[in-house]
Length: 334
Picture 1: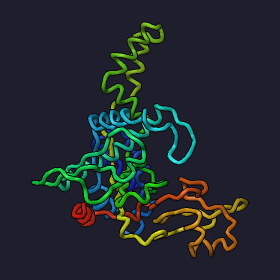
Picture 2: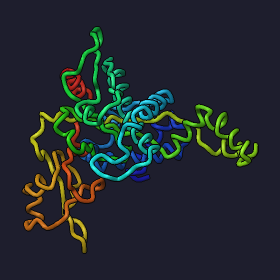
Picture 3: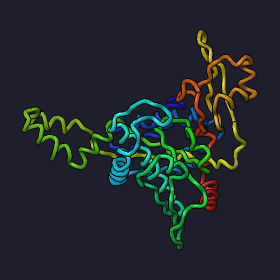
Picture 4: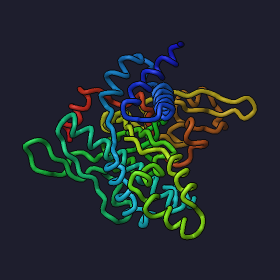
């Protein structure tokens, strides 16, 4: 067994305690390891320290009730969100808006669990309906420390959610200027989770299947076969990868790792970095000028942005603050 396989096995064994299907646990383990390595989380400290002191410490499980809360909050807000990607004109199906928004709420719920389990701090998330610009400054609207009353936090906090294999904290558009703290949460959502949830709450057995039988689309044998094929709902693993305090960074570009890529279509690929990335800030960076003195090559952010146009505040996950001491320092500021 090589090192990669050993690391995947260690993560799989950790997840299998709550994930009933070993293949699913292994899939999630591969995603976790890929995101951590590509984000340079493991590069300097090694796998064992990362696993014990970063990943496990900043890890929580989300149960069926948490998923229900995320779906309800997302359903409440999805109809008032424009059915487009932020900053673009691409139309999205309302169901996609719903599930995408729910994933974001799962990240917020995961952070709330983490803060409560480790520091006994309660947080309240804003779920009011309104214009999108109203919600740019902060995702946490109230906070409660032990033996204290609820109050507004001292810092404006933005929580971003990605999948386990994600490497970037990505804050597009105007939100760069509106928030102080940026937190990245990685969620272990598999393709079957929503369907498994519908099974878990008996929507399929009590609502959809009887309707299908009345319409002649299913018989009892087919319904049983479908029921058995649909996976059971397992708790959702969540890893709070870390945070950044914007006020501690040397902006616009705090850090940049990039290289030339391609043989025929040569381009500049940003693989890791921290800062406000735009055409102007990147073109003016010494490393970019060194690689492309004439300024003719396309600049991409690997693997999420094919060509940088609008400004994004970006940070690779390995550049985020992590560990008990850093989180305790952040809670003192909140």
